[in-house]
Image (cartoon, rainbow, N blue to C red; front, top):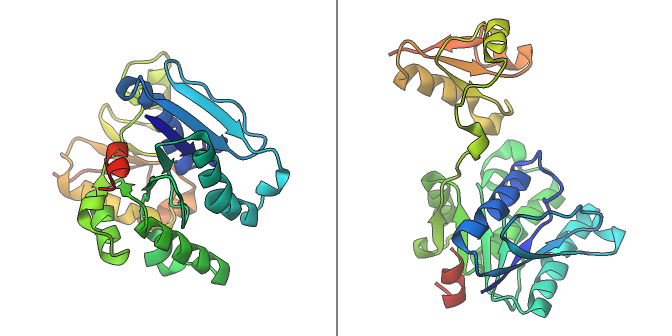
Amino acid sequence: MRIAINGWFLDQPNTGSGQYLRGLLRALPAIMPDDEFLLVTPPGTAGFSVPGLKVEQRALASRRWRTNLGKVLFEQVAFPRAARAWGADVAHVPYWGSPLSSRVPTVVTVHDLIPLLLPGYQGGPRVRFYTQMVAEAARGAQAIITDSITARDDIVAHLRVPPKRVHAIYLAPDERFRPEPQPGDDAVRRRYQLPPSYVLYLAGHDVRKNVAGLVEAFHTVVRADAEATLVGEADELVGHRVEAHHLRGQGVYGDAIAGG
């Protein structure tokens, strides 16, 4: 099988979409060792190789793609055109930005519907127009991947997509995040007064992250001898009623070809 992948976020590893794309590429050799991949990227993107992955990276030449309008043209014109010219069997857009029209069957990953459902993230007229456009494009995709059952239910309800075309595939931590003793662990524990057992939250604190919900859930389900450790600026932590470092606990490509 020949699979073209939209690599817009390849050189943005600090974003969720960039992490998702890189994690996907690293995992593909183990599950699809005999398939071929085309990674289409914007200009100036550094090369990215994965041992065992049969991938050709094709970066667009014109700098005009590095604008908001250029991103839309990349998604709607350049990527589907490159996928068709390469002879792809499937095109995968690993974020909410699939083309409205493509001669190649398309899979799109929609991580969530936050720009559609939360007023604080809906932006101005241009942002709302873009959201409506990619929502319509997702409806036309042969398959949609999402991160959770909740997101899957949102997509079915709000994008009006048949449930059989929406697949919840959970995210997973990289192997490097397995708990293994490292030199200097004791020094870190002493510096931050960490207990032997704790749950670490290391991400943003804006509304869409629902850190307050995390805090409430932790108090509800985590055993009493564990602690939650939130990382952030002091004013961010105060917003979640955190008065110290810790809170003590209380007690899918084949479907696209077939059009499924």
